[in-house]
Length: 146
Image 1 (cartoon, rainbow, N blue to C red):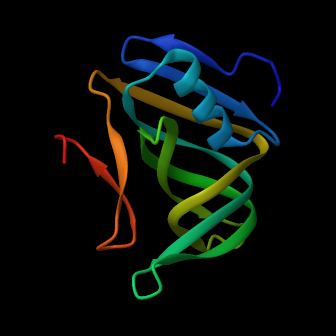
Image 2 (spheres, rainbow, N blue to C red):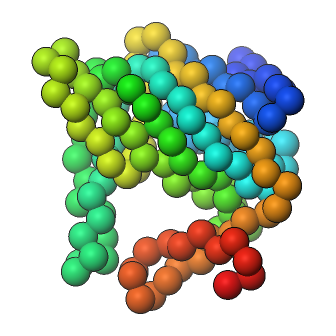
């Protein structure tokens, strides 16, 4: 990961601007650790060199991944929390290629393309944890000690 400063503090949390080839999830996880963010929501837009979307198959209890390249990320939204003492990013997005066909869903990975990715991270005071829910076969955000 490049050592260049990628975020700045703002009244509601942080503004993060990532550049070409940056791993968005790695930068978000590093921010959470460095700033000890208890939990947050995020929104953003920008360019994706590679984006891996996943559709969760509840019968198989796993994601069906599909990778796309060279997209404009029209929207990314998500939450930042903790799982087993480590940062946990849960994000969804919508992106389109040159033909204007949109793809979207759960983001499993995101590498920034030519241009930038701009994220606004709104920090919350309560530390939130994700726990594995065997009933659905996926992680679940706990907000009240569940």
